[in-house]
Image 1 (cartoon, one colour):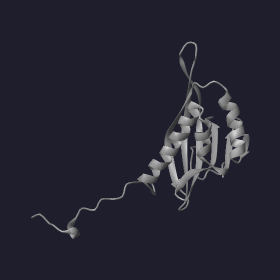
Image 2 (tube, helix red, strand yellow):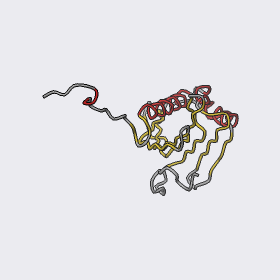
Image 3 (cartoon, helix red, strand yellow):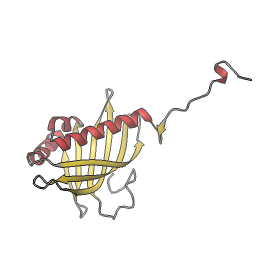
Image 4 (cartoon, rainbow, N blue to C red):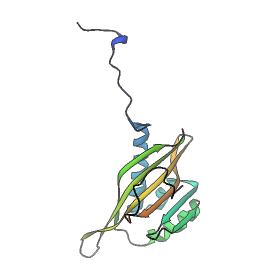
Length: 168
């Protein structure tokens, strides 16, 4: 027979990715998408809004040397120079890996790729590929980037794994 009553209701598991609830993963993905759109459209205010004022941005070159920008003012100055150049790049994120650090902090790894449209011919080429590692922090209900590290894909990284000693 059919069983009725709350004691027989089917229990629906809460959707999650790893230990993170699905709604948090969606919020992380929305933030990542907003940053990519801001990069593509050279929307400096929207781009900067994704970072906490004391955020750190680390750009690793192909030889393993890091260039470090500390604070949103340094990030703004550097990004404004890049945004002064013509647009034409599209940024894409792929293969995210998420890890909760504590109740307010989460890290996410992505591969990235950029494509470039030639303004004369319209042809599209791959601009660059690499990895991106964000540490995100929630304050007063708002999620922003506390630390971002990016680098080219050189084939020397075992895998973009949370807690990588080279980036801690």
